[in-house]
Structures are given as structure tokens and as C-alpha cells.
Image (cartoon, rainbow, N blue to C red):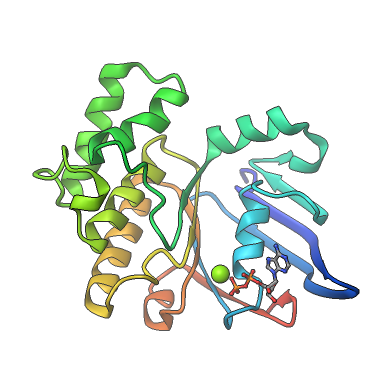
Length: 224
Ligand code: ADP
Ligand code: MG
């Protein structure tokens, strides 16, 4: 069998606030297989964002081990971690975090250029993704000229631009009204599947969660 895309081995994370210490993650174990889409549920404050930041190699300060595509991230230096992230991981956040001064198309082209993809290929890929997401007529719009749902669709296209083996999504539709949220989440999941990526998706939408391949729940610092 191929390596898991993600393997967490007794992942821990604590925060100090004054002289109070909160143990947020207390030994999280998880394996995500290639192409598997995992819903991450848990109440607000249970540590979903903290866990996704760890998997995404965005923050240090963790205990335990994080393996991405078989590589032990804790054994890498900062540059190597950045490369590992760039080569394997795409992100979607609750708030789109698009580049305000660039068009929808450019927002999807830029991460590909950073990954040294030839310019013409970047353009084709960006148009294809945005077209699938119904944004073919909005390519030249800047983020502030797009609706909330459209902004999140651009963020989805950007996350998939480099065909990552793993997509991490932190309440990707939490900022949208219910109808739009359901639509964008369904489009997102379909695109992830068509792309063959694995995903870990933190969501409050239990109904959509059960349409994914597996549901895990953070409770009291561990997955159940
Ligand atoms: P969720 O995404 O499930 O709502 P979070 O991962 O954002 O949960 O937060 C989990 C807990 O960790 C919360 O109690 C939060 O206050 C705490 N926390 C998260 N980030 C920090 C930080 N940078 N400093 C201190 N506490 C933090
Ligand atoms: Mg969160």
C-alpha cells in the first residue's frame, strides 16, 4: 500500500496564557490515505484550526510526529518544510485570503508560478478550474468585486491549482449563507475528488460531513 498522505502520531499542542497552560491537542493520531476525504468535526474551541495548522506545517511548537507523504516534517528545516508544503498541500480558509490587488485569474496563477510551472500552463489550469466553478465570466474581477461565494470559489481553485496531494480546509464555507455554503462545499468536494487529492475539512455542517469518506471528531484533545 502507498504511504498515507498524512500521518499524525501522538500530536500534541499546548498554549501558555499568562501562568495558565491549555492543552489543546493531547495526542491526536490520524492517517489519511491518498484520495481520502475526511471531515473534521468538533465544537468551537476544540482545536480544529490548531490541528490543521499543524498538518499544514504553518506553525511549530508541536509534540509528536507529523508525516506528510512519508516525510517526517519535524526532521526538516524551515526551507525544507516550505518546499514540502508547496509541493503537497493546498489550503482553503474560512475567509478567502485572496490577494486584493490581483484578479481572480491571477490569484490562481500566482501559486503555480511560485511552483515554477510554465506560464502558459498556469493560465490554462487557472481558466479550467475557474470555469468548472462557474467563474468563467469573472476571471478579471478583483476579490472585492466578487460575492462571498465567488470569493470562496476562487480560494478553492487556488488551493487546487498545483494539484496538491492534500487539501486542508478550515471551515471553508463557514462565512457563507446556508444555501451558498452547501453549494460551494459540494463543488469543492467534487473538485477535490476529480483531482484525486485527499482532504481534511473542518466543518460544522454535519450533513455535508457525512457525504465525505470518513468523519472524525475532536473531543477533549483527541480524535474519537
Ligand atoms: P477550533 O478551530 O476548533 O474552534 P482552535 O484550534 O481555534 O479551535 O482553538 C483551540 C483552543 O486553542 C482554544 O481554546 C483557543 O483559545 C486556543 N488557542 C488557539 N490558538 C492559540 C494561540 N495562538 N494562543 C493561545 N491560545 C490559542
Ligand atoms: Mg477554527
